[in-house]
Image (spheres, rainbow, N blue to C red):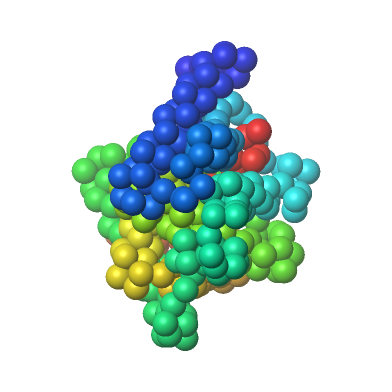
Length: 314
């Protein structure tokens, strides 16, 4: 394992970020989505630099810091740091758009931005309704999937591969004021969907956009959860492909987060100690399964909030 001071922890993420930015630029051009301003070399280079910067700071650098032990504390979980990555995503999205479209489009910039990242919809209320249904259905699908996988791993003797404790930051998130958690819900839904599904997906496809979305949550410290994150990301991705708008996926993402941050986390943390004690004997048929379900709920409490852990690793 690389120590924290090893320069490869910076060099490898930097190279990966540069390669990812170059790939996005080439794929965007190949799909015919290259911004009109990118016919000027300096604008195109600036656009790649913007994407390379956010890929480095928000995705690959946190991955490079995996293994550096920095447990979360109330001091490191202050409110501004919770929203730092979303702020960087917003700045990157706007910077890329301005470099590519400012002065080169007949439409007002606001309308062009909404068009380019898929915020326009013919019937917005239909998209909202579909998003609410998809968010609730996604929660059910993901929790069932993770329960089935956890139980399967247990039955085949792989229980040691499955974490038995919730991430340390989960109680910290649960202790945040409700309005901060609501802010996390809204920012994750709007910002992450606009960037990953609105900007990236039409230009580089579902595989790449889902891959970087999952990587953005890798530093959470429990790779098992990536199964659920990937499944949920695919739900959002195909929802965008079906509706040709990110509005439904924004609502679905926010709905999912609302359920977990304002309902599931408080309930799980309230009853988890009792369920864990009852499920301690994994050979007990009934109480053991109750313990596993309680554990999976605690794992899901961290889904889609990898950015929080990334900032803590810094």
